[in-house]
Length: 249
Image 1 (spheres, rainbow, N blue to C red):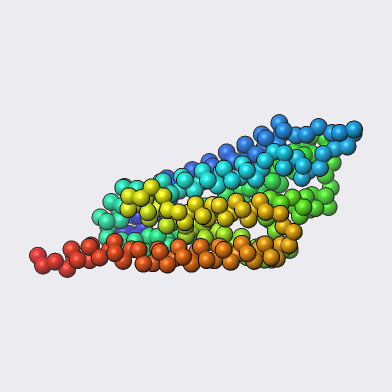
Image 2: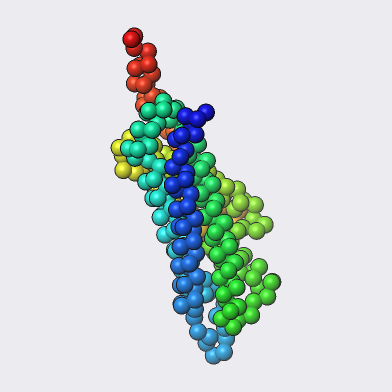
């Protein structure tokens, strides 16, 4: 058990970076929202959705997600981790899925940070002198594309899609870390996961059920293909170690 816990030590190196990335992304979004706040036209206040779109909150969140993905793949892969896995004779298959679960937790932390940030931006809207009732705030969460994808409300298919996006992204990030431990710079799966999340959160939800279903299906296919890779790839990597253990002394 201690051998398995030893390869999870990079958690102490990456978890605070996850929190920093989440906080920096939130601060950038708040700054853009404040300084790019549109002026009233003929006494008519801008809608909250227009302010959020003008502040490019979705694009900033996408940049934060790319930063988070690159950091996790870089810090949990590479030669040091490869040496630790080989020295402790830990199953790479166990390592892959353990890291995948940890990556999912990291994405959920970032996701929760975005929900709190968007709630805070609506409070900033009121600080700019505009009124925002509870009913209007609820409508903003429903009408604004990024906010509605972030917190779907009663659209259960979007909740299912979001859950599958988290799973697919975590597995693909683990695949990327495994590729880096073996000397490859990146795995194409993680690029697909980031692109899928970006597209799902940018497409207008004319039909939430259809869009949620399509996103969930693509995420399931991506997750399934990545699981297949994570299950089969370690076999060839572990065989030389098993052969060395069976050699006569």
